[in-house]
Length: 137
Image (cartoon, rainbow, N blue to C red; front, top):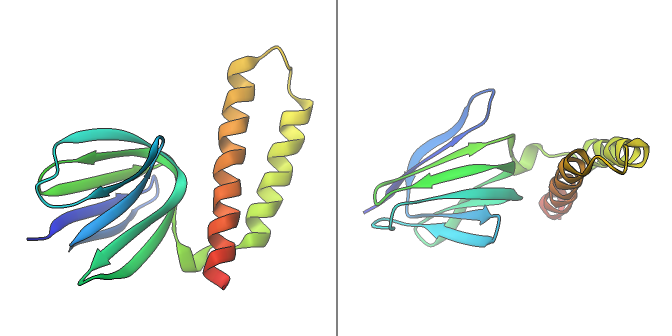
């Protein structure tokens, strides 16, 4: 019995299909969404969602944070941003990382919430660079 998986970004629905399993980058570690999984919601970190069918990874998407809602029959991933792994660009991600680093360097060091947000964005972009580098290999 498969599980219905939907990956949604603010712009569009990137994926909507039944699969055997989805491995999701949770904030506290990866987790597999499978049929009959106990219901749960979790925060996502920047990382790769792998979709499995018949013992093989069929699709891979990079998500830049967000959250996932899992039930026994469905997994909905609401991503802050999501991209098919094949569409990632190391160069574009490195340019975003440089911009974020410059913003961090210029930020008021007493504004802890702003610094935390910039750090989280930089961690997500670093994960994107790693994922894009792996996609090119």
